[in-house]
Length: 298
Image 1: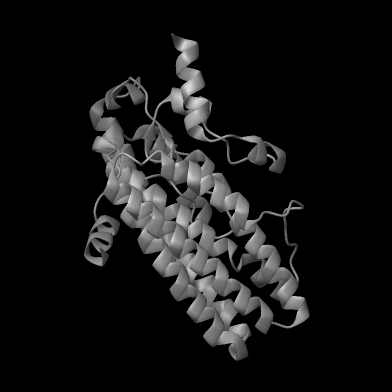
Image 2: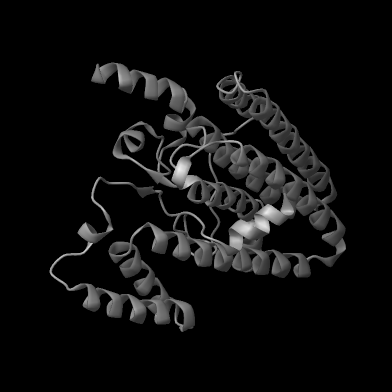
């Protein structure tokens, strides 16, 4: 498992992702019927390659975040799938390093709780490995490596959400929380619906059960950490837990669709990242919306 993870992080990877820790995850790349050559017009192939070479130099070597971001955007506009894969791999590594740096800064500010935070990270890592195991059993054809990176991004988003507001609190910066209380039963219900979709494939079904087990272990240990923290940190920490549960509920209800290369039909049925709490709670699950959409086409 770890060897495979190491390989796919160094080899062609998935989805675009901003490397600023507080920035939202980019949406999945929508697959169109045009081939790579149709993405760029009114330029010769030589001009295109020269432009791309210059953009890659900026993207790889510049220390100016604005320059890197501009190069990234232009590369996504002018590149084809092979370049998207390469871009996503570098983006993921940058973001992963950024999240780890923020975590270390936060832990350093509270050495008296260091053992709790590192043990929680171990719980998250076991959950992460369980999620990856599920992704490896799901066939997405030529988009599989893209899909797996999307899964890794989702896990990283959850880990960042688990402590980001605590770090903002340390710096006296504005924090954001959901006003809706998300519960374990909501997560369990969404897992039940998702797992039911995999009943025909025992290995996939069992992997999902293990993922749910690791998720519950992570959330259980957060309760242990919460009890150990002083009131001011405890309140924010619990708010972070609520944000994690909201994000996880969103992921489960979308049933890992919308990752990697996708088409417009899937986009129409997905619950968007920008959805309200009400929309999230009322969304029945991607499978339900997808079936209704297919019926409407008949």
